[in-house]
Every structure is written in C-alpha cells, then in structure tokens.
Image (cartoon, rainbow, N blue to C red; front, side, top):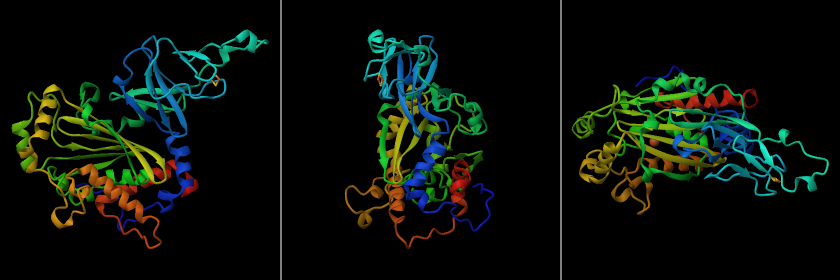
Length: 391
Ligand code: FES
Ligand SMILES: [Fe+2]
C-alpha cells in the first residue's frame, strides 16, 4: 500500500453540516457541480445527426445534439422565448427542435428558425438571429461525452490529462456494453459519503472481506493527480492463477493487464476496470441525504462477454472467491444486504448507516487511518473548489 503524505493523526476536514445541511448542498451545486465538466453519456448514445440527450450539470440543464455535420454541440436546455426546457431525456429528431410551449423551433445548430404566427404576434418584427440557443461546451474523452455549462471552459484534456495514464488499459469506446449490468439507483446518503466510501482503501479488507478478496488490497497503489484519485491493486495469488487458465485469448491490453483500476474523478465519477471489464459509476447529488448512481459496464469483446457470463453462471468458480459477509445468526432477514454477497449492496448499506448517525449529537469522528487518507484529500478538494467561504 502506498500511503499518502498526510500527517497522522488525521481528522476529517469537513463538519457534519457538510453532509446534512441544505445550504452546503446549494453551495456545492453552484460552486462545484455548475463549474466542472459533467459526464453526459457514452459516444454511442448519440450515434447520428439529430440524436440528442439532456443532462443536469449542477444548476444547469444542458443537452447535447449531433448536427448534420456530425459534430456534437451542447446548449443550455432553455427556450429563448420564456425559458421552457426544450427537450427531455434522450431522443432523436429529424431536423429541428421545437419547444412544446409555443412551438418556437431551432435547428440542430441552435439557431432559431421559426416563430409561429410571426407577422401577427410580432407586428414590429423579431430578430431571430439574436435568439439562438445559448451554447455550452461538449467534448469527448475515452469514449465518454462530457459537458460544461461555460461555453469556453478549461479544456477537458487538460482537466483529466494528468490522471489519464493511470486509469487502466481499456479504451471504453472499443468495448462492448453489457446491457444487463446497466442500472440506476439511489443511496440515502450525502454524495460525499458515497465518494468517500469509493476511495476508502481501509474498508476493502473488512466490509468486503468475502466479496472482494480476490484482490490483494495490501499491495494497492493509489494517489492523486490534482483533484482526481487513482487506484490500482493486483489480483490475489489464487485468483491470478484462476484468471490465467480462464481468461480469453489473445490478450490485447498492455501490462499490467490484470488487477483492478478504481479511480474517482472529481467531483464524483467513479470508474472501475478489471482484466476484461470497464464500468462507470456516476454520482449525482439529489439532496443533502440522497444521491443517484448510474452504473454502466462494458466488456473487452464478445469472447470476454462469454467469459464473464460463464464465470457469473458457474457458482463453482465464484464460490472460492466470494460469499456473504454475514451468515447464520448474524443475518437479519432474507433482504439483509450484508448477507447478499454483493459488494455494492455492502457499500450502500455502509453509506446509509453512516448517514443515519449524522444527526446524533453524540457523533464524533475518530482519527482517519492511512487507508482513509484519500477521504481527507477529497474533502480538501471539495474545500478548494468551494473557495474560502466555507473554510
Ligand atoms: S417558451 Fe418556448 S416557445 Fe414559448
Ligand atoms: Fe466498497
């Protein structure tokens, strides 16, 4: 394990309010989520001209659309007439985007091209050339589409540049999505608790003692590049041996081609890659104590897909590498997440139980371990992004 250079004893840098109070939440929405690149989707979500998708970036609702020139453009999803949101979710249009309220219509490049009953309703005329949609920024990185409310933000390549080489061997755009693994769910906890759990190295051997023990947590390597966290750990010896005889060939990814890469990009985009898979874990704060997670998984190729299915189906293989943390009398019922043998259920459980204690006047956070030092670094990154006002 590579400890971070933070002096011990280490204590949390954020007060309890940061995890419970509406004013903290609002401040973060303004200062962090409205001012950073926001994941919007994967490139295959917008494959042709006219395809679009909308995404919330802090206080801003944005949408991305592919123009007839096959270029992606992002706009604020706000009609220039009375501000109604133009489009909902994901879809496809032929040539134009029409506001549902009074049918003002924009082309795929954001120009206002038609106003119904123009001569009658605007007898003095209306200058449509000044009423185009307000542009935002869009860019693509590693097969992911990102948007930024500011039309001229610092570049995406710059934002992720330093951490890019440490994110694992996969180029997600070359992988195949595994649709059964796509899901969206909510965690009853503040978004920072979810991030902190994701980057807590200490809990891996404990909360996940039965579910993630195929990796050698003691040899984990982790650190930071700017506000972004990177993490890699090798497989445990017996799992490495099993992989050797089960991995599909030929291997196309460079060394080290086994292990788990689990970075967290600021402010809340978790990635998780293993030998043959890549997944994204998008964290969206919904309320001080509620967070939405969107999960998508891609696999190296069709043979990897077969390989994974075979592993997931063959309980014999996983029996040696997984299982429930709580068994027998410790299990509270058939729905007990700690008896599920699912590491995500274990994480959700831990986050929600932690959030519940935040309202107790008796709560006092103990010193952080070396394995929790990433938590303090994320807290510092949050404070930096919020500026002086909350320090
Ligand atoms: S608000 Fe969009 S057309 Fe009126
Ligand atoms: Fe975990």
